[in-house]
Image (cartoon, rainbow, N blue to C red):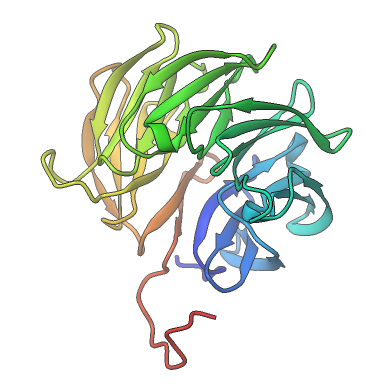
Length: 315
């Protein structure tokens, strides 16, 4: 089933109940959020917003959605209920670009303290935002351009993919100090962690690979090649990944190959390639829905090119 949504979806969330998927659409024309009912396979809402890029996370109980404002240097807040998004203000991180050189990328909800973590592409930083005060309360400088931030199940550490420095930074959430840096492939982007918090998987867009980090032993334990053949030239562009089958299988979206790579990861340090699943044009996000046993993929460019008689201006 193919469901038309907004232009160039770059990220996607699925509600815990598995009823809805929400994508952030960051094309050259309209930026928007699409709400898709996964039971009827229909887009039930498309909400036009000023600017968005990558960052997308739910707050408590999937009732609040936080969305990166990209170069607007703000975070948009939405109330989500019964498949409908309603604007609920915004949180300012800095002045709008070019005055403010920040560019918010990934977001993560820190439920233990009801705070939001945001990372940036231009200011190379992690911002800690009090959701009660609706303002930044701490800034942590990092070594390069950042892409995503996730928090471990124990709510003790945050992990940031440092896109510009081929690494992942581990940050303690007690005092927000840098505790460890792991070397990855080039342009690490999306990350996913096992439910027990023991392994972190990092997609490396420029290296046809996924870096596997053993968080108990604090080391890189494995590099998984995601391309069709192991020695293929760089260009598969792995940019999204998800776990399934009780964390025994890994799915990786290879954006420039238009397919998902499937791996058996049940045996540590011995990932096994199980094959490839064709999808649409330039997959940018992939999620596994346990309740319906479905794989949901956001295809950044749809399923085919179309005539553009009013081109070349995409707007």
